[in-house]
Image (cartoon, rainbow, N blue to C red; front, side, top):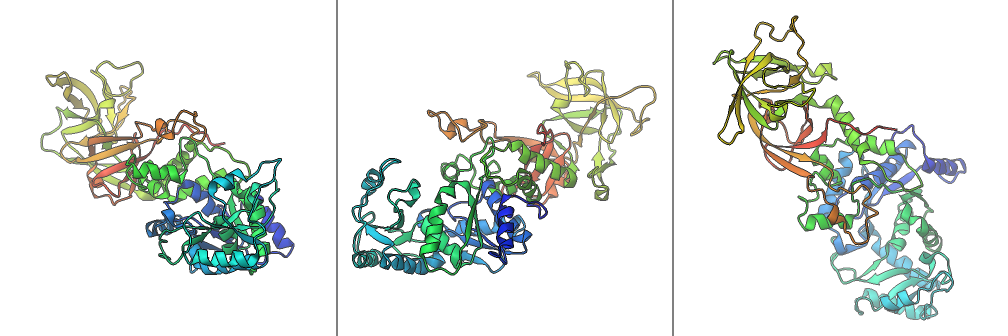
Amino acid sequence: MAENTSNFIHDFIDEDIAAGKTEKVHTRFPPEPNGYLHIGHCKALVIDFGTAKKYGGICNLRMDDTNPAKEDTEYVDAIQEDIHWLGFDWEDRFFYGSDYFEKTYELAEALIKKGDAYVCELTPEQFKEYRGDLTHPAISPFRDRPAEESLDLFRRMRAGEFPEGKYTLRAKIDLASGNFNMRDPVLYRIRYIEHHRQGTKWCIFPMYDFAHPIQDALECITHSLCSLEYEDHRPLYNWVIEHCDVPSTPRQIEFARLNITNTVLSKRYLRYLVENNIVDGWDDPRMPTLCGLRRRGYTPESILDFIDRIGVSKANSMVDIGLLEHCVREDLNNRAQRRIAVLKPIKLIIDNYPEDKTEYFDITNNPNDPEAGTRKVPFTKEIYIDADDFAEVPPPKFFRLKPGGEVRLMSSYIIKCGDIVKNEDGSIKEIHCTADLEVGTGTPTDRKVKGTIHWLSAEYAQDATVVMYDRLFTEENMNDLPEDKSYIDFLNPESAVKVENVKIEPSLAEAANGEKFQFVRIGYFAKDTKNENTFNRVVSLKDSYKPQ
């Protein structure tokens, strides 16, 4: 988030500072360690860390591990790696929600003693049945249970005397509230499940709506920034702060979450893709996870640019994935060195070129970066060109190689097509050409050659695998599917097309894992970090997205 930009969150903070309510802005980013961060989380963390940075404040990183069912230290480590990759740091302000279990329990006991909470024994089915509607209040038969009895039951719940579902602890607020979150919500439930940090110490766990405001207040967070679905929960957030003895009063502010076309951002759905081997793990280059985007070749700069461009709003909207692609394309256009790759190689023999000669042509590494210099690319009698750059029966306005036609080999000679040798099945075995050795790399004065194609020396070219990645889903709005369809029904069968026996420049064989290039006339690619000698397409060269 650009520090000189402003939004409605900053307007609220400015008001609090002007009114003397806030001296130093203190935010937090509280991911749940039950999966890997995705581009939607990225928006939240940029808002949290970026807001603190703008105001010269601080931002905590807190693992929201109050629900132990799916949590794992693997995700904790991955979340920290992703945040650092984006360029943010929390220094010594790293916490776990479970750090506050004991204090949260003490505050729950205090609510019971004050008559603001009680132990309820409605079953989940009864709870739903007694919930009421807009014209009828909820019913809670155990609301008037004496505080002493609730306190005894709550302590025995902690001691593990009761089975799951037998009791819950509920806040005593307003059974007739129009906001159903305030109809005596559950604060604690019994769960016999091992916690990734606490082990089996606890068998009762606080609900998020109870634990989160307490955690914010204990850390003296000034502004609790969260996504829009928590707007209806804000009265409960404030109730907890007001009724518990905590050292500060955070202000909750909600913003619209990120929705992107042709993308699923539900962690539950993403986990299904991983666990059912529909994708190659959380870091599959088609996944919207930050580790997946990183493996594909997205840069942190391009992602931060994307987040900055979409801005911060109060209304939910759908962002075109083309904008994200535009941002990485724009970034890599300026920084990625150019290299040659021939995806569908056809051998081309230059009949009038010396048999044993090798010469080297200087080719620009990046025309947008003069300091990137040039590199020397070997040229020999036998070269490879791409099958798409030749047509026996060319369509109209085909300016590449064709029978009897001429083209320029990039940064090299002009060649004229001669004989075509075919295999028994009719496929092309090799193409014979002659080079204009007199003109060389110069421009002929007696004719105009329109087409330019890329090439590689057959002797020096190396073999590689290229994966042409595309959007994972075919449907634009994956949040609005037909009732009889699942998101799995809209998987794009062309989202990962592996191309074997690709010919690449010799220097590419030494590329570092994750290193990014523009394959001239093809697209932007990154060396895969998991599969040897494999390059992932980050994005094509063509940019159909028109920024607003």
